[in-house]
Image 1 (cartoon, protein in one colour):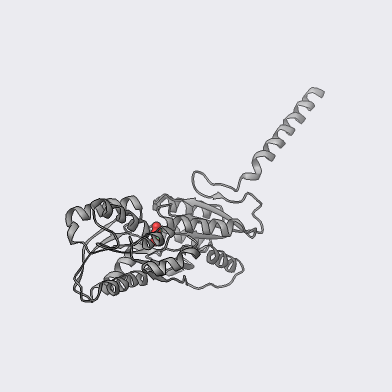
Image 2 (tube, helix red, strand yellow):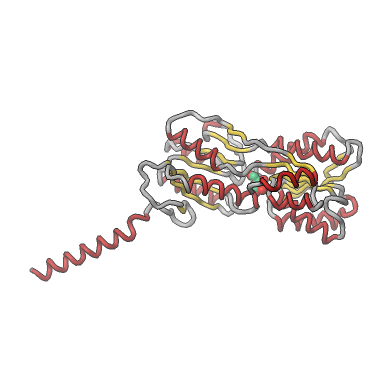
Length: 338
Ligand code: AHR
């Protein structure tokens, strides 16, 4: 009998040690990529935010991820569950379902594309979990499927890109433009295309002669620009890139082709990462339309307000500027945060 009792006590002690070593981490991650947490503390009084990020395709995207991780990860009021979708909507839907199952307080979603969100957003709504869209919008008839959108007006960005290009090149010039589009189906690509076209259509001497997706990446931007140069090389007067990374890829392609980016071919792009400021200062690019990725503080405030039962605005807009030419880029670079 004494030996059986000792054995039971030994088993009990072993089990206790096992639970102590493994149990405290049960919140920190879902299966696979759905919700690695920046905090392994207790959940009770923290505001738990599940964030489904698109991926890491650009300098802008990296800055957005860092802003959110820094703001929510360093503030003890919040617990952040982060998931990287690697550019796939199916991964984002899976992450959202995992956040719903984990009963997070708020879901933040940077949607890779505009369409196809109704079912999963209805599931979040049925569970009473508010969804905040970050930086990119979605196309849904029922706008009650999300609580708020934090981000820029991409149509205005496209319009500003066209206005500044026309100012730079002169409204009476004959200008052939090639367009490097963002990810197919993304609001950032659709709206920047629409905004630019809105202005260009009033100027028949400005023509978009080629337009193709470069997926918001530097390598694809270079590849597409190489193809444009091959087919239309001497005819291209300007590049409109939906983001800086693609513009930086295009700059390389133009140099390798033997022309001078920023001089022989003018360049306008959207985002405002440090690398493009440096390119403008070096005379290799011309116009920067800023799009602010530092959305962490606004997301934190929105999550806090919702947690406190307050109403928040349907569209929390970000403030942005346009920078044209070397002098403006030089003056702005020292204070750029991304
Ligand atoms: O949705 C914002 C866009 O996505 C940025 O302009 C681009 O760089 C990013 O990848």
